[in-house]
Amino acid sequence: MSTTETEEQRDGGDAQDGKDLGAAGAQLSTAPREELTGGPSLSVVGWVRWFWRQLTSMRVALILLFLLSLGAIPGSLIPQNSVDELKVRTFKETHTTVSPIYEKLQFFDVYSSVWFSAIYILLFVSLIGCIVPRSWQFVGQLRGRPPGAPGRLTRLPAYTTWRTHTEPEQVREAALAMLKKRRFRAHTVGDAVAAEKGYLREAGNLVFHIALIVMLVAFAAGQLFKSEGGKLIVEGDGFSNTLTQYDDFRSGSLFRTDNLVPFTFKLDRFTGTYEKSGPQRGTPRTFEAGVTYSQGGGPDKKSVIQVNKPLVIDGTKVYLLSHGYAPVVTVRDGRGKVVFNGAVPLLPIDNNITSTGAIKVMDGYRDKDGKKDQLGFQAFFVPTFGGAGKGTMFSQFPGLEFPVIALTGYHGSLGVNAGLPQNVYQLDTAKMTQFKDAKGQILKARLLPGEKMTLPGGAGSITFEKEVKEWASFQISQQPGNGWALTGAIAAIAGLVGSLFIQRRRVWVRAVTGEDGVTVVEMAGLGRSESPKLPEELGDLALTLNAEAPTAPDSSDVPAEGAEK
Image (cartoon, rainbow, N blue to C red; front, side):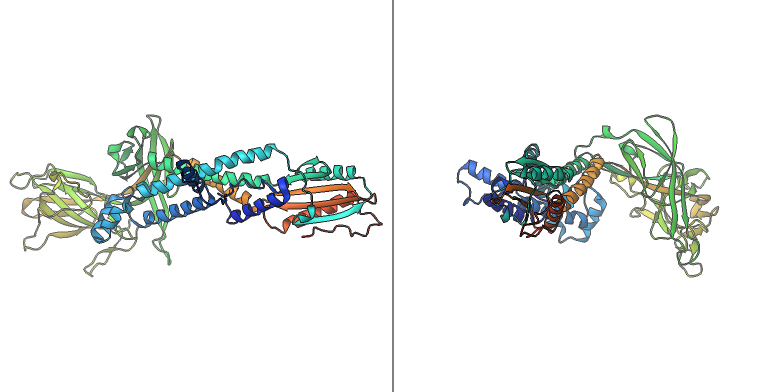
């Protein structure tokens, strides 16, 4: 495989040069040549050999790269089980027609599907089968010397000649010194000096392909051994990196819980600032979470986590994703006993952090008759109240300037004992009865900090305390191979630059005594591809050498001022 689209043409040109120029035109590339011998043998060995040659060819490798890129498209557009199972479930409920088809095609698990894995493995094998033989050939070229000059230098694409009274041996010595000074690998072969330059082109080509393998391995390791989970933490609360502490958790097929890095951290305070005036009012200016963390029972350390600036603990990264508000509420039963007190995280639904959620009292509550019961409240919160007198309620600003919470209460069964998973931010009212006031109207109220809503019939009360905490959502990610992937990407770019901008070329300088006793100097160059730089370089070399071996004054030839095509 090659990094440029014209390598097959160049390889064909190299093959023709090899026929016309012998060893001088051969081995300018380590790319394997395709043998057009009329097809493989019908024997098993013949078919295997033919299949292997096709698999390790540039054409098939490019096709596999294209298929891999094409296969990643559904993984980017369609929700994936490995990323968000809830989104996949919602997609299936919304798109009932195409979902069964996607299920059969494994579009919800693209990166672990059979067809994507097959393309991935074939590409991996193709790259290795292409690189190994080319690497050995390239090492052989480095250990060898540039081949001697062909019999007729005039057949090369860049050529110049002149006559001089300088002795042939002196011309060759001057040419050898000049070429070595220009960093050519040069030596004298018979009546000519052979030189070659641009080995870094092929080295860059090989580095590019090796870097691709490194990136593939790093990607595979990252998918197999990765772990990723989310956690919502209210100010003052903490997190321990154990499986049970996560709100949601995803991992690779080879990941083990023993691989989790032991650490804890506590959210001390979340700080968010916003533009308060002008056309950009409400635009976020500062999002940062001040935390205290420790690793493996070590000493506590302070740190600040910002967006795109994660906390890194022994390879595990803690990213700050989002934030919101958690009003502190207190629920009492009819006898005044506190049955719930705490900060309730609510989820934002717009840029001004208008938030919704549920307050659930599952244990400890008894109704006026002393019977066990459960309470639930639908909550609607705005940090800066707006909409008074309009029958609506919305937030005018994301900052906490005029907080108001709207509550609607229910009693009955919350459904938490059914054994089914339940969204903590939603209230299942299927088996609950809504509270109503003395007029038979639905009981609901808007509360300011410090205000209380009394439940009818001696059922108790709920108080919006004079405190609103903030919460932050974190992503804890452990993905080995990222460093290798970055190294591979940098090496691939460096190799690609070298293979595109460095030209592999050979130069020969022949000096022989003519029939009239005057030395005839011939210079010629050969590159892997047609390039105006080769004649220009040859012309520059010719002018430099002409200064050491000047044109004979009685010669009818014109001194070389540049290379001829």
